Image (cartoon, rainbow, N blue to C red; front, top):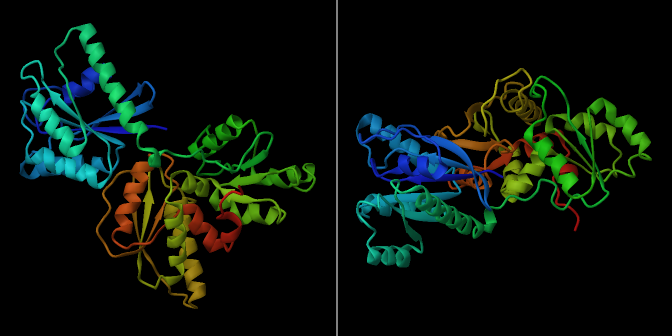
Length: 407
């Protein structure tokens, strides 16, 4: 699992120098000119004990002017995407901009590491460090980008150890394996992976790869095939008696469900992702809001990645078409219409009167990022579900595929 770590602070406080020295690469442009960093800059690195992390260098929180305000907004949006915040200050100046950031971090239950930058020029005031630790419970460390090789290595190791400690303490944002509770040693898990216009060229999608790895980690047997190969495999497994679970793409639910004997459990990669990252129960509640939609209502489709749209696109074509068809039939109204907005990646969510939001599986984002994004909608009393659950509901197979694993 990739972790996102954001670096925040005022302009010209040393954020870019910190990112460059901590990652050991010239990732961000360093300049004495305030406001050099505009859009957030990301660098991926491996941190001992933590794993792969994205280090995100943000623009100064005190930027001003019309363009500066846009930079600040982008930095603020990055807060909802991170698992840990590193807040830089220097010259022992810790005032309202820093306090406001700490307040925002606190509302999101974000672990924070406070770094006194440029400590080779002005050392950290020990009494200030104690005050900040006492008031906010945050660790405060000194950092300088102008040290010798050995001193720099010790400083980097200290910060890495602090990051490991802080992230280890936030267990509720740990992602479960996608097949957690579904697979044991020697179980046979059948993964039905359609190869159609949406399948990426010469590779599997990430949830399929994650499921295969999870089966292997549990010493189970992963059988990967296409829908048309499923009936023959069922026959070779004594009518499916030897199959513990079948997982497929949500769009293939009707086809795969028709092939499977009723006693063979079925779910989708998207629904597995909902369990691994959640919020599963909120998605279930949001799914039931589909029946309450009225003609003219606005629906938000959230995609966590950017991709080329095809005629079979699940979020922009398939789900809107199924929703309209289902509700037109339910309401006996051939003119039933819905308005759709589509938001990809980390783009800002419009503040509109949505009656439902449908989130993709979220394989390209962290659990915290997904929970924060979905949570911002739930706070606005907007029901939220996910792709797999919506398609299951519209296909009339909710009870078959949306369930918890047997203990």
